[in-house]
Length: 128
Image (spheres, rainbow, N blue to C red):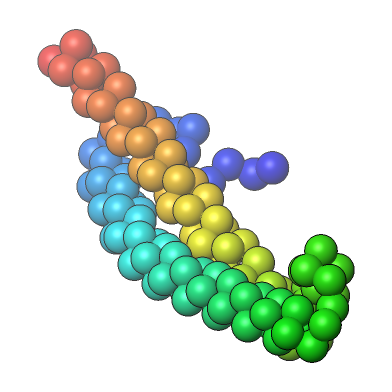
C-alpha cells in the first residue's frame, strides 16, 4: 500500500505549512463524517423501528388467523415486506459502521501527520 500524502516524510519550512493545512483538512473531513454518522445512525434507528413494528403486526395477524406463535415468528421473518425491512435495517447499520471507520481513519491520519510535524519542529529547535 502506498503511503498517504504527507505521511512518512520530513516536514519543514513551506512543507510544514502544507502539512498543517493537510491536518486541518483532515479534521474538517472528520467533522463531515461525524455528521454523516449521525444521519446514518438515525436512519438505522428508523429502519429498525419499522422492522420491529412489521414483525409484531404480522406475527399477531398470523396468530389471530390460527397459526402457532412459535411458527408465526419464523414465517413472518420470511415475508417479502419484513425481509426487505430487515435488509434496509442491516444496510443502514453497515453505512453507520462504515462512517465510523472512515472517521477513525481520518483521525488516525491526522494524528500521524501531527506527530510528524511535532517531531520535525523538535528537530528544528535542536538545530538552532
